[in-house]
Image 1: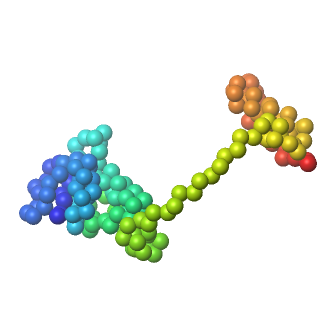
Image 2: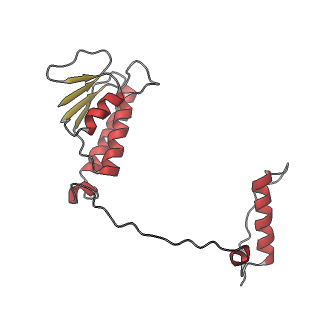
Length: 164
């Protein structure tokens, strides 16, 4: 399927027309899109732009191994076009790299979840071996964070003088 995202131009023969980024993304999610052509300005930037589709494809390639279709930009907005083309370059760079998880595995392999045990430390265990001076600095820092800075006070710095 070929997808054409635009709010004004005539849809080329053989292409499926969509008007909003979410429509294009839904079609991309099917895995049946072989080519997509994007306009940037779709009449309502609050609703979305063609760049939103680029961002979605980029994230999908990196996080799920999505195989991007051929992507072209037909926007008359030159600065947006340049930004979109840079995004496309990054998409293809990652998709064609040997670091992409889907090159070795068509589907991401499931890794066993590691379980971590968490032990709550008592205040005594947390401060064991810490110098009284550093403990005082830490106490002052905590007060600064909780109460906000007093007028004229700088952000506190640790002296890093820890003794055992």
